Image 1: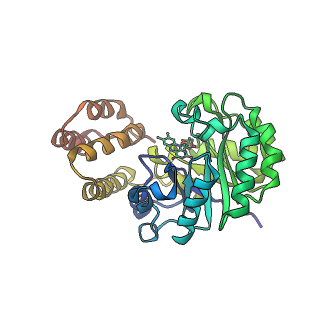
Image 2 (image 1 turned 45 degrees about the vertical axis):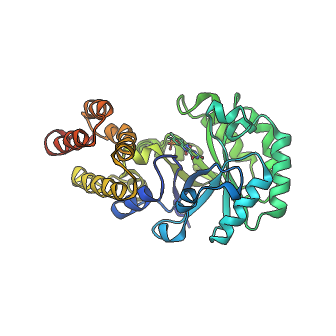
Length: 321
Ligand SMILES: Cc1cc2nc3c(=O)[nH]c(=O)nc-3n(C[C@H](O)[C@H](O)[C@H](O)COP(=O)(O)O)c2cc1C
């Protein structure tokens, strides 16, 4: 029997919080679970309530969510993992992918990848004491795709829940081609459940990647592709597009999302900033998206923003495809 296709919403800090995840699920299908954006608190004691709010069970009954922590200190990871276990989470993900130089130079995120001995010591400590299990989201390396070769035997020694691989180096940030050759090599060598992540932006692209590396892949994680085309996860699940009324359906989702953030965020500046961020992705779904993106980017007032977006939906918006 064919294994069911598992799709996971990627963590995009500043975008895929519980407000977004819930609004998404009210309008679109396809995702089986989500990985939450990382908690960066140095310790459980210093973890801000607003970060845990994203993970409260009452905010997450639509889509199962796995929390993520970014730290290089095992005691801090364990402190938070215990707090999260008390909230009901038995798997906690460790971020070994964040590429930002400010993070990486402190040996956090992908900045730990060139140091197998530090990763080994971290896992040794955490796996002995974690109340549930740890999974990992990682890149191939910070500087070189070969860094992962030295990590594979270490990863194989620990009882990891799964390994999510974004086959780029940290140096590449989010551009350049994902390295499918290197990914295939890792999949063959890692004994854990593997999830693929990176640039799954269309059904055609998904089919091409799945056809090439899919054999041992247990799940597929989609981030920006779902922000740009929220119909994509369902299309992948169905194996075909659902062509109907996309613009109307997207508009309903957008209204719901805007309204949810309006109720949640304090003050028009925060709301405007948040929506500006989303339009960098949303605009790419429209044939004439460049113009609206530019106009929204330039505006500094919420009333102007509302005028621009209303006019766009009423008169100009042309959904791609
Ligand atoms: C704005 C932004 C925020 C991100 N935040 C996180 C994060 O909190 N944790 C994480 O593991 N990855 C984070 N990522 C990486 C994504 O989860 C994902 O690995 C990357 O975007 C590639 O997948 P995609 O092409 O499907 O978007 C972020 C990426 C972007 C662009």
